[in-house]
Image (cartoon, rainbow, N blue to C red):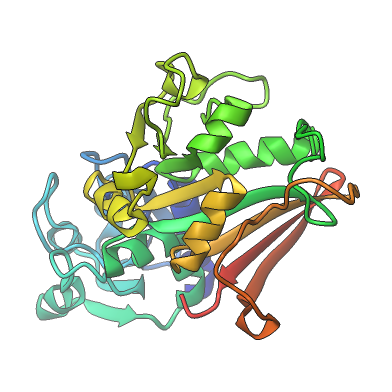
Length: 342
């Protein structure tokens, strides 16, 4: 194995913690003994639990001495709910630390310098930094600007319809695609929907397994425009997950202010699920970072569009996306794209 192999494994561990660690980052760490054998692996535990490096060092024990730690994010250099990971690495006698991405949080940054001052060799951003960044994209983006990373998810027919002309929309996509949406929900801290969607579809907006059982961890449900017009018996207000109903003066919600409040509540990634009017407002305000579209091989020819007005009037103003993934999910296609300039 070489540096890339170890870091690739650390990235895999980081992905496994996605959605479980906020407001902390989902970090992965691998400890290799001087001879190259992996002796410790760790990933960030839920807030208050051990960081990835501490878990990996605990597994490695004395075998970490003289070895190399591969960690997706620069080890923290401050005391929060837990102690600095830099001191844990130094105390374990690790000789070298390979870091995927620098920590953008000024409170926790500086770990590389502290390690070097203690005689530990440190390499930053030279081994698969793009893979490490992708695994932690939501947290890195959110911490850099102070607002959550927003993913807009939609389901539509090939001609862009989110429902038929008579308003029916269950089900446009397949059971496989709907199961994949629950995987997507499991990786975020909040699920956002408009009051119109709640009134029309009465969604529960929770994470469930393939057999319908609720997941142990549930994201915060956010109903935008949720006021007295939302029936108190709506599923989104049941006791299966916390819910925040957001209203604004004159019936309009200040979306940037709402996202800042979500960040203060510990939300680092949010999934925008509905409906087309709210999606258009988010895009018009430049608040969407990534788009995940589930496209069913169906045609309707009429009915509501998946996206409402977004302040774009000519083709030259169209938002251009960078497609980062295209996958077959059952009979449907899942397209994942990043919003350019974000």
